Length: 202
Length: 202
DNA sequence: TTGAAAGACTACCACCGGGTAGCGTGCATT
DNA sequence: AATGCACGCTACCCGGTGGTAGTCTTTCAA
Image (cartoon, rainbow over all chains, first blue to last red):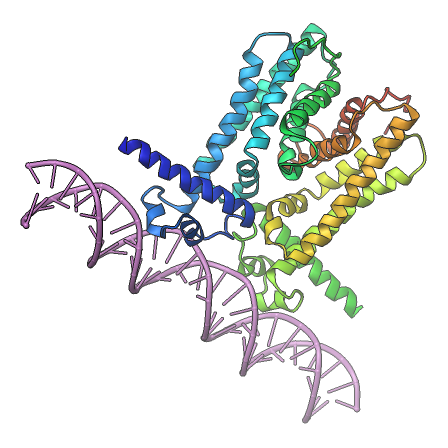
């Protein structure tokens, strides 16, 4: 119970930090700003985080983990490579858009992370690319996909989706589900997958 | 002649600023750092730029202009929509990769620009998307492309290519021309363009 | 040879912001 | 009621950095 309250406070700090870092940038936001927004003072934050950059790492890493988990989960799931790629993009796009601020902060403020945190996250990203490449490779093997260079195509797909953090505005023309679905469609078309029956589309 | 020397000094300052901002980030780089790297002192920089953020704007804007010019030039050029899109991606990719550091700095440090500079650049980016959308629309009209949503596809393409600033390493597996060509290939496949004869490939 | 102006440097300031030491306060337990 | 402890706050420090004032040097024209 005491533990839960502690965790809740941590969460609230992160929440507000994400908001402000997103709007004003990492160096453009002071710890006093965050504290003020929370109705507390700076030392309060220091009882939960050792430093400002630790705060940054704490709001970046889990989001990258989620991205990896999305693609990995779908890749290891059931179905043909086409179906699994479809699902992977759906889930990945959802992570990117639902954690848009965290993603933006990570890519913008990468340089402010400690070397350790950066290496740590980079390992996750490497794995992300590997998983995606392997899935593409599978599809090539079954003849479902036509791609000349699976590694490059992984990067291209990853970029195309990740980039959505740049332009997506919640409440825009397309909702989260439509957007995910269309991105998946573009992806499948890019890898030369034939349109699948897809009997159970949402 | 005096003018040319002035312009050269400006150029050298920008060059070194790009290098350091790229490696250490905008706030992570001091004006003293830049001056030291040039073998001069801080006030020297101030005779050429009014402030640190003006320096930032001066190294971002021209690169975005180049990106727009690349796509616009190809879009207005001769040939079928397929050929023009092909050329547009080639040229755009070249800008992104040859100005990799500038692009990275722009996306990372956007928040540090003044509102005026930001609005200015955003107008260019809007135009970029519009030009690309129109080109796709043309291809759809001729039946060369199969895309359901030209605006979304423009964003997807723009993202896929821009993202290359993230992972491209000069001297990597693929050279600049191969990379551009493959990105163009992926793009055409994504828009459902049929492979073109392409008699005069480099 | 001299004077003046351009251009760059030395030296400095003022402020800001991350981080910390130590104090008060209220709640829970006895 | 007394006691102690968890918790958050006030107040402060100090280093770094953008930006500037005023001086020195070098060059060029008269």
